[in-house]
Every structure is written in structure tokens, then in C-alpha cells.
Length: 260
Image 1 (cartoon, rainbow, N blue to C red):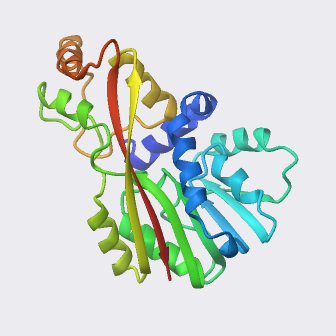
Image 2 (spheres, rainbow, N blue to C red):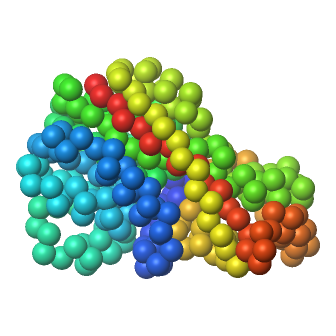
Image 3 (cartoon, helix red, strand yellow):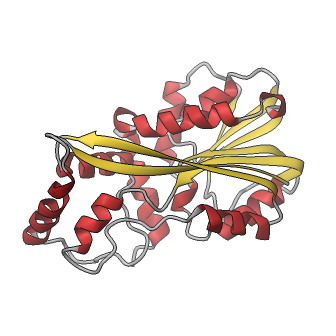
């Protein structure tokens, strides 16, 4: 039986060739994350966790006062796509590894950054523990992740059809704060922003999620093939949200800055 971790890895591996064509929200969130970073702390060894095709990594590498930038992703094809995009940027070190099992020694990283990636980790508390382990004293963790209001229209539409999870459940700001405190992080600053994207159809939204590699449901999913009738009924329920000739999709992005 294929594990959840393997399914997620395969989803993002397949999405490596389509990701950049549909990742506007990811880039918008990444720009906002960059603006929240204290440039004075961009020194030493920087880790981009779940780097994807390298938007945030290239921004970090553009700063001159760091010693090394490490780009880490679970999908090798994402890293290969990134290398092709950033050819000539020799200050980046590429590592194919799992964010839940960081291959670094204790107190070796000055800052960890992550843009819309940590929500795919099954044991987020464990991830924070491991990040705390590899960070140097006074190190910082800066990341964005999806919040619970993400895709709530799609979630409500599917709820009219069956009781399975068709949309992932994301942690609240309070839960994230709790996990970080439990892992020993201090001075935790958390802010959330709502983005509403508009699509020509529900199919276009679902196609974009697939192209991003973000369509895999972690828990409570229907393991059987969705029937045409179920899909038709879900789309009809979603159409009630229609604004003019477009359907909206809400994304809640939570930004977090925490220090050791």
C-alpha cells in the first residue's frame, strides 16, 4: 500500500513541469514573506524548506550577507527544475530530503524559511522540534502556511455530496502558536491574510490544484474513484458562490516569525 508521504512526493514530482505556470498565489505569498524578514538577520547559513521551483530561494540568494543558501525539497524533479531556472546562481546548495527528517547536525543553521510547504507535513510538532534542533542559538524560523479558511467554498460544496474529506484541514493560528511554544520557540508573531482567487469554472480551480501538486488529501479521503454524479452535484453546489461569470476560491495564508 502506498503511504501518504509517497503520494505527496509523487504529486509534487509530477507538478514540477506545470507548477510555475499556476503558482501566482505562491509567489504573492513569497513576496509578502520576504518583506517580513529582517534583512539584518539574513546571514550565515540559510535554509529554504520545501523550496519547490525556487522562488523564495532566489530571493534569499539575492542578499549578499549570507554564507550559504540551502534549497531542500522532497521532490527531486522540483530541485532539477529549480537548477535549470537558476543556472549561474552558484551560491545555492540543493538537498533532496524530507522536511520531517532534516539531514543536518544540531546548531548548524542560522535561519529557516518556508513558503507554503509545511502544511503538507503530517507531524508539524515534530517538524518544529527538528527545526529547533538544527537552528543555532538565537536562530529564526520564518514561514507561511495555509490556514483553515483555505478552499472553504470547495469544502462546503463537497459536504453536500458525501462525508469524505476532499479538502485538507489546516491548522489555526492558535494551534501553530501552541506547537511552536511546545518546541521551544519564543517571540512568536503570527498574522493571517485572506486571498480570493477567481476562476472560469470549478474544473479550472481543480486543474490548478493538480498542476500545483496540491490536490492530495492527507486524511479521511475517499479511496474510491469519484463518480460523475458526485462531481456534478458538487459543482452545482459550488455554483451558488458564483460572482458574475467567475467562481471564487478563498485562500488563508498565515505568516509566522519565531525565534529560538
